[in-house]
Structures are given as C-alpha cells and as structure tokens.
Amino acid sequence: FLLDIPFNFDQYSLRDDALAFVEVNATRIREERVNKVVLEGRGDEVGTADYNLVLGERRAREVKRYLQNLGLESSSMRVVSYGKERPLCFDHTMDCWQLNRSVRIVVE
Image (cartoon, rainbow, N blue to C red; front, side):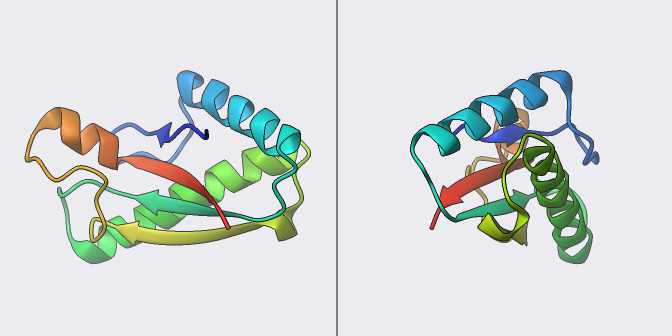
C-alpha cells in the first residue's frame, strides 16, 4: 500500500527517486482517507546505535516535512526512529543494508 522511502548511506536528504515515492504515498494517504501515520526512520548496521537513532529520526523528519509541503497535516504524522535496532532486512549484505536505510510509513 505505502512505499518505503530509500536513503543513501549516511544521508538524510531525500533523493530524487525518494521524492517520487513520498508523492505517491501522499496521494495514497489522501485517497484512502488515512488519519494517522507513523514515520519509522531506520539506519543500517554500520555505525553506532546512537548515531543510527539520530540518523533515523532525521530521515523520518525529512519525510514528514515533505509530506507537510504536499498538504498533509503535521498532527496526522508521528515520527519514531528505530536506528539499527529494528531492521527490515537481517542479511549482512549491501542490498539488505540499503533496505534498512529507509523510512517506512505505517498506518495507525
């Protein structure tokens, strides 16, 4: 239903392809009349747990900012960071790490 938002290694700015993913998600959230979402920021297994918690939060806040620019209400979005503690993929590969460098939007 909603696309995960990818990020580059050690970055929290939205890539061009990620902008398109956020736009698709904003459209789907409006069409489905979703009232509340959680923006789950994550990092990969490189770096410390503390560093990845901060990076995950910055990623989630960047997605929130863009969703607000697209017309979604700030009060309808909650930001949480899991850093590297709750990965989406558990393999120790570059492809898996890329999946974990993301923001997942979960409907509450």
